[in-house]
Length: 318
Image 1 (spheres, one colour):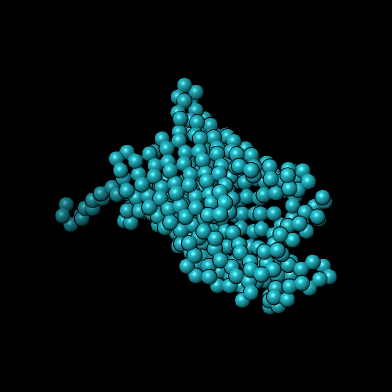
Image 2 (tube, helix red, strand yellow; image 1 turned 45 degrees about the vertical axis):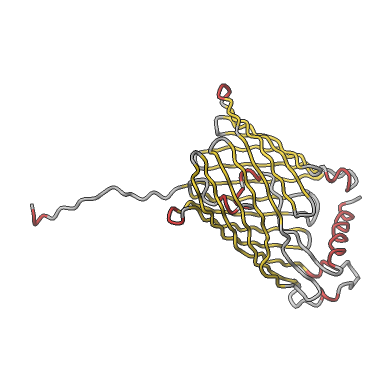
């Protein structure tokens, strides 16, 4: 099958879903999920203890036009007055005909439980969806009068939604995360005949740190399970971190991909990369071996306020 044939195959799938009712899935895929907890769990906001700004760019199925592409930006910080932390996440997810833009504000209430810490959080935000309407049609055809009738070439809709989560951590030992995202509050259809609504998804993940001091290495296995309540996609990973500065590892996303991970920490900066080898394509696209690349960046910083008492002398009293 040539690339053009693959593109037609993708279009046919989306035309099937668009023929009566269009339902879009909003939970994006990240291979470096262990470094981007805030993107799917609001309870993580402020847990890092510093102001933390992060960005992720992900490209799936290299060489296939219309393949998934995700850009994610997050920022969060602990806020003592709120007894927890607050965060902001923004992402753009593009797939074939569709473009999703999401903005979420997060708050997490933190509780110290001895040597451990528990966060309970909530995201509130909205997702805006648009699709290029003329791409629903093949050349020389006019099969969808609904989409062709849009005034500016785009069909648009948006949803307000909530997400809730819990995050429990014993620092430098283990953590457990659970969240449910896309709990829709309000839906505005793109057109009367085309419904757009958020699809709820649940995430369960955790990691454990095994220190190997004789080698200056920490082994960190982790697991990540997500579900849209009709299907489940589990993923297992293991990272080796050398001197808390360099890391490398591998992940396996069941029935989907094998992932190679690598990265480093330099002062307040973390940089990571993931290379996906999609096993899905071996069976479904004539042995075309799909691949993907994901780049991750994080910068941690603090705003220091000088609280040193200052004394002033008036020369009148000398």
